[in-house]
Image 1 (cartoon, rainbow, N blue to C red):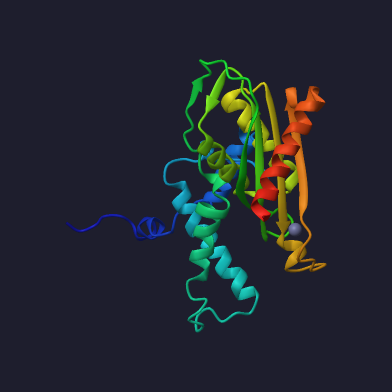
Image 2 (tube, rainbow, N blue to C red):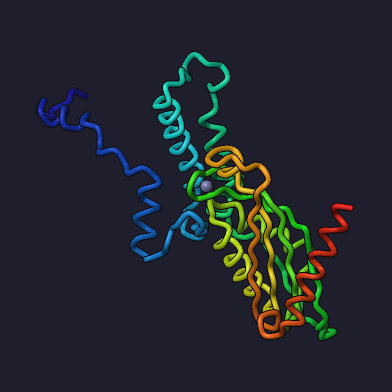
Length: 247
Ligand SMILES: [Zn+2]
């Protein structure tokens, strides 16, 4: 059948539709509308729609490719950097910063039926993060002290939650507080103490280039805060564990 459409109308149909917003902007608009913070060490998993993480991976890879081009690296001809952009995008979204984009691993808690109230420590738990200022690694160890409350969680679960919290761009002081908040939410301990000792590659690899310096910080809550003897018992236990490691 011959078309009776006037020429003008036919042409108008071929005009491409306005390009959709990049997925990062769509997510950002959603977060702003809901007044949800999305700082470097916030988790935004529950605000991502199905399939958006895959789209984000494609968008981030494109930006990393642009970064490499801006660094005047010939990615078109250099076989070593040919797929670097895709690798970096995957690494950020699913590995080193997964604690921003992926939900917390499922952690079951159980009632403290035996009314355990002796303190115990777990550690060293390896923690891996990146500093928010330079996006280079922070690597260290974490010790957690618990005086049980109404609920308990399995020992390995502390590693899982620490890994999830630390796998974000951070400053160490905030990472420890966020980890403490998550553990309190999971098992409501009567006392909680966390100590982190870590090396910052922004000091080892660049900047002042101090290879041995590490940062130690801690947070104490509940009974560990109110009872000085409990607090020193925790630090003593950590010290013993550390010396066992060295010997
Ligand atoms: Zn740094």
